[in-house]
Length: 60
Image (cartoon, rainbow, N blue to C red; front, top):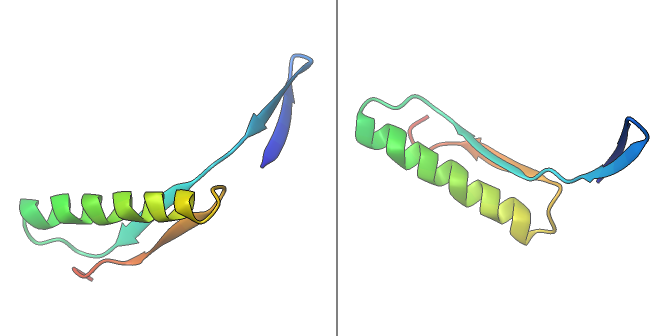
């Protein structure tokens, strides 16, 4: 968690993210990579949030 102050207001910022990388060859592979990244996002959230999860796609 990161706390920021803007105009005398304090905000707590929480960030969870998921990513994959690779080289899709077809539109279906692009959609599958998006689904993989979405699964990585939920893995970050399930592991306690404030994390980034990801790695190579199976289309790497």
